[in-house]
Image (tube, rainbow, N blue to C red; front, side, top):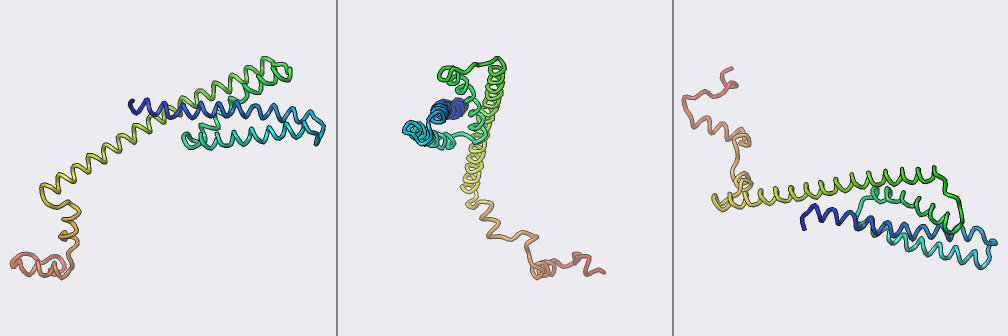
Length: 192
């Protein structure tokens, strides 16, 4: 499997897990609405709120696992799909009417989410490619340094540490060098 396929798989699998989590979370909304219809502090009130807390607990675990694999911005963009679950459960369980403007709004959210995810997936593949290129460059540089060391016995870093360059010489060393070369100009400072 090439890196592009891996990036695609690595991006879409957590998003699928997130959608399962959002489906589970949507049942929390149902439990909350059912609890709100019950008499306060009755058995059924506590039953539905207890289920809600259990659903939120399961969803929190799924959410945390998803965030290990995808960015927070992508995860939050996917949460918009929960609107469809609200429409579905509202119509099927509570008999609520779905109006055309609700469908148009939900479709706009879905379209925006798809565009957002497609952009994020393409960037993830690009990032994976960049990481691969960077690793290959580092490997080539390491091989080059090892080749130089084998040829010369020392790397450039080792040479720099053992020998001083002209700019690193002290003034005393420069004076000694100048004294060893008779007949040459001693520099501007001595002429003036």
